Image 1: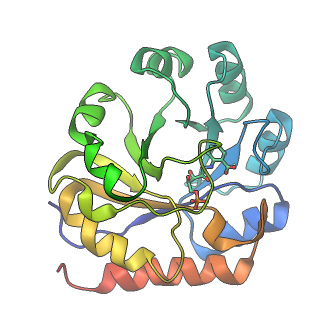
Image 2: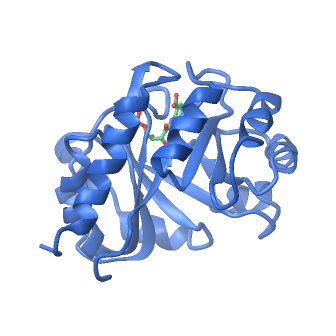
Image 3: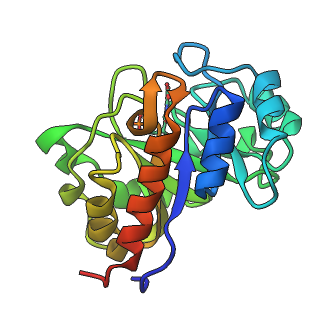
Length: 227
Ligand SMILES: O=C(O)c1ccccc1NCC(=O)[C@H](O)[C@H](O)COP(=O)(O)O
């Protein structure tokens, strides 16, 4: 639906200063901090706030929650100025709205799409309509542990026209992100991409070279004419 825009990039699951700096220096538009205690990439609210203070203007901190109590979400968003929320659990539309302060903070909703052929049964149009107040729907693979597993769902099974801003995630890496952009960018209002496992040396430990390769692959895809 759009003509060769610049794909926005979020690097998720950051735990270290040098990884925040590497993401920013490579050109990331957003960085994600996982506020889910069961994740190997979990950080505390205080640590997320400390890391977010390194960010220059126009790079957005995103706080990732899984079925967190609304009061805790509100407290975390208050502690990290300018942060967006990413709801990655089983939160309903009403819970997302309430936890983000009924319009006070912007938020992403993760859609967890079944792996393989079962992905055809996921009704993204209905899902996007029910979360219409989200800033974007983040597409991720349905995995145990909710996310960050590096698994790729079958992108080709998604609808051909989605009237929403989408964020593609789930097993992205320098080698496949260009294909994802080429396939999905024409199908939605805007396409952004989100990566965690694909730019890591170990869980929660990013690899600066992989981050730079990932950003370069996105920019290469942006430079190609629409297929
Ligand atoms: O990172 C985690 O450990 C995590 C735990 C629970 C829910 C979501 C989690 N991460 C989500 C992300 O990092 C991204 O938004 C996205 O799913 C990309 O993950 P990956 O497949 O590892 O690139």
